[in-house]
Length: 339
Ligand code: AQP
Image 1 (tube, rainbow, N blue to C red):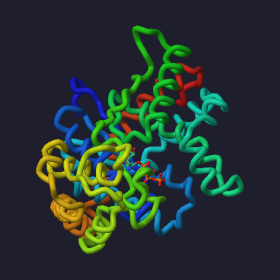
Image 2 (cartoon, rainbow, N blue to C red):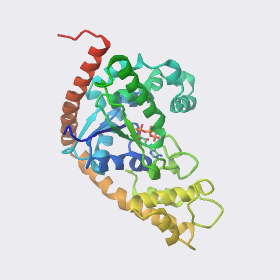
Image 3 (tube, rainbow, N blue to C red):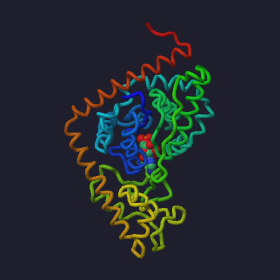
């Protein structure tokens, strides 16, 4: 970790046996690219995953599989820190302190909490789900993060992280010597929101329609079937019009993001062709991108000791940074240092 480069931090929850194309295009791919220009710190946020009460064995498996997917997609442990959140206890400690700075009304306004709690019902909603964005703020602020690459759905949570950083600085520090860095979101417009193939009005999500999801670790046949069954419209013209043609526009965005061919060029190339032709082309670019990732994940999971070694090394280095930040914050708010 050099001190001259800006720092990037991001994370995902190990709440599924595979990441999906939205996670990959909206976040993971930017993480890989940002390693060239930033000090990069990436985490598998397993404490966040506890909000959905996973089976212990599933959580353990998914934590490793998620880390393996980061590596397979190009996160390089020689250049980035990669660790499991629970291996750095300072995340939970700073989260408590930040929760004491967060207004109840402020937390209640988080739309993701409203959506998720409405989905499971009040009885099944736990307090962890409510305070999730505060733990996310702790994840980010511990590392004095400059930039957080995420999909559009995380924008509001990022705004809370910024507000908490500013609050911490204005209450307990001076302008010349802030306690924590105020992070900026990094959202790439073209891939900020990948839509569900079966319901192109909704974001692709692990809790959406299985038939609308492309998982990184899906077998090629499943991927092909899902893309070929993607909902389009009654029209026949291939055009980029997210409002009136959300399904076709989503397929064009996915193709363009993976092939590097601009959307306008794709529209020209597919002029006069049928939706079926576009779908076949999308199947091909998706398989070209995901095939190597799938193979590398299998290799990595075959050597779990190596994977655990990478995670332990990342946690050790992350913890050194986190400990320093937490000690400064504890001291600033008036907690007596432990001897
Ligand atoms: N559809 C998407 N398009 C673009 N980016 C997306 N992200 C998620 N879905 C899309 C981004 O992926 C990262 C994963 O964050 P997470 O682990 O918190 O996962 P999540 O947002 O809970 O993922 P899901 O699948 O969307 O879960 P549910 O079903 O629980 O809502 C984040 O950077 C996110 O923006």
